[in-house]
Amino acid sequence: MATPTAADGRAQLPPVSNIQMVDLKAQYRAMQEEVDAAVLDVIRSGAFINGPAVKQFQAGLEAYLRCDHVIPCANGTDALQIAMMALGLEPGDEVIVPAFTYVATAEVIALLRLSPVMVDVDPRTFNITAELIEPAITERTKAIVPVHLFGQSCDMEPIRALARKHNLFVVEDNAQAIGAEYTFSDGSKHRTGTLGDIGCTSFYPSKNLGAYGDGGAINTDSDELAAKLRMVANHGQNRRYYHDVVGCNSRLDSIQAAVLNCKLKRLDDYGARRNAAADHYDQALADIEGLLTPARQPNSTHVFHQYTLRVDGGRRDALQEHLKTAGIPSMIYYPVPLYDQNAFRGTAANEVNFLPTTDMLCKEVISLPMHSEFDEPTLEFITDTVRAFFA
Ligand SMILES: *Cc1c(COP(=O)(O)O)cnc(C)c1O
Image 1 (cartoon, rainbow, N blue to C red):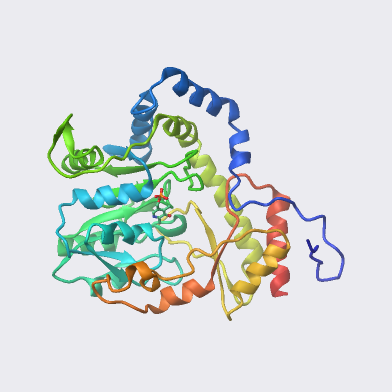
Image 2: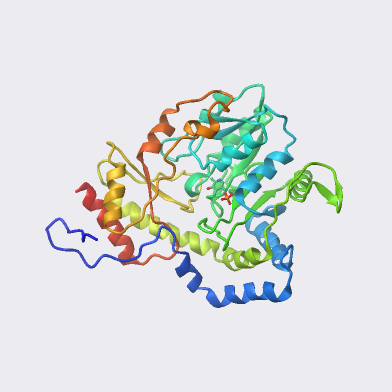
């Protein structure tokens, strides 16, 4: 592994070794006794499905999100699918999604024979906006799925107003932003996931609130939607062996819930640590020509699921190679627009095959390591290495 040299030719301090995109082992070490005991408790109790740990987590997440109903489920993709199934949509109904997102957002829509309509995103926040959504609305549009990408809220007040005007459901894909808070113009603050009709999130291990396996949750303030969501997630039954709708089987298991109970009370602390790392990155990388640090949506907090830079001039892949040589991992979220994925060719109702910002972002974005367990030398080594590339 090459040792980067500083601008004056001196070798830098020994490179920090074993840098992770997400450091789950260090996070575990900091709460090992508590997690071990909680997991053992489940094993000893034998309550593997819908045990007390699941009920505790459901109540804990309802309190954290400040919402009326949380329905735990098996993963974030199921959360989105169950949400879509509960809305009572018809095949061919259109659902608006960003073209710049993880595949799951649109996948569940296509799977249900609904029509994902892809729209472009803002080049600074990476999120869809009311202005970008409005021209895509047609007679058949039934819902919008704003994705709070990389950890900050879409500008939801105008999106809600637009949805109300056109009588559309809003289903938030909150897989990357749990813990972020959006401030409305009247000063009221609400968590992402509680800004529309239904919120969906994921507890995939590398998410901000990550289980030690798969997990997900759906939330809503509507009693009626909550009842439907619960029924869909449980084989379409309210009463055992009486199935009113075709549903699915999607549960959060008790062991994962036990882990999540330990981590939920630390989630805001994890968010603060991620913000401290983002502040370090921002300061060290702010003034570099050809490099854009992530913009903050003014009326949202950011939980930095990812810290994502833009590199112009076609040098993004070279920067990634430079980081790799120094032992620093990085990721491209996302390299291919949804409309260019083979799976979606011909499915988008508006037959989108090019959106300029999405196209540009897929070529320019790069995400640096981001988690809650950094030390100062590691962050400095990463930013020094990035700076050396542009020097
Ligand atoms: C992770 C993620 C999902 C899916 O979550 P899984 O738990 O992996 O199924 C959906 N949407 C977005 C934006 C995600 O980042």
